[in-house]
Length: 318
Image (cartoon, rainbow, N blue to C red; front, side):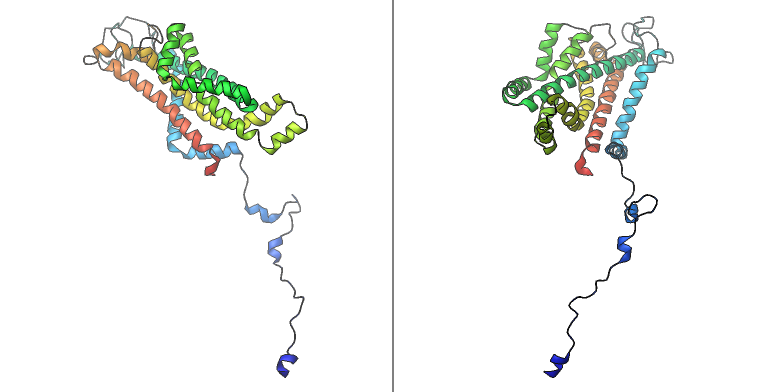
């Protein structure tokens, strides 16, 4: 008992041991806490997306194919002969003079493929640009204003999605006629639906965020809010749709030309070349094989780039 009373009581205010290394003084030159130097440099979103895209081997393969096709489209016509020149031997197999052979009219197949890729890329880029603008406009109006504009526009999208794409495209081409302009208008008028729904979904999510409400409260014009604060936040999925859409537009143009409702002969269209070579497949398979390879490589390149962009821009993977 006496021992218990005579034992010293614990100090009610013990000294706290402070690790001086945990609170390092700031750098006298920069004024930044030196303990933060181990974090490493920060990367921008663009640099981080490119880093992840570069690590995707299939995406880099697709990018290489796309760049190769662009170079061929720009430089190739200066290295090959006229695709309409009929001076060769009819249906000649590949030779030193005609690497890919000739068609039934004696035209060089390689020259027609080079010009055909150039034409396909032009149609794909222009049609995709047009349908992207239409989709962004429709999706922005529907997602921002909602109400009756949203109801009317989305019901129109639902009706058009309910019609098979090929049937809708054939109907429009039959009205507009054949030619490059008609094909571009048809592709643009039938391919904006997915873009519109994607942009609408993004607008519905972004317009409810606090900084948008704050911009409205201080009187920022609606046009400025849409252009400066909303659209930049919905561009990531649109970029992916653009890359995939170019390949889809090229494939759709080849399908329409194959069916005889796309480009008119003697235009060097890859789909038209395949259609013309059906009757001679057993005797001259090169007439079908080389244009088909051109279509496959073109579409595959853009699809791989689109898949790579989707993975690189997905912030959930960071």
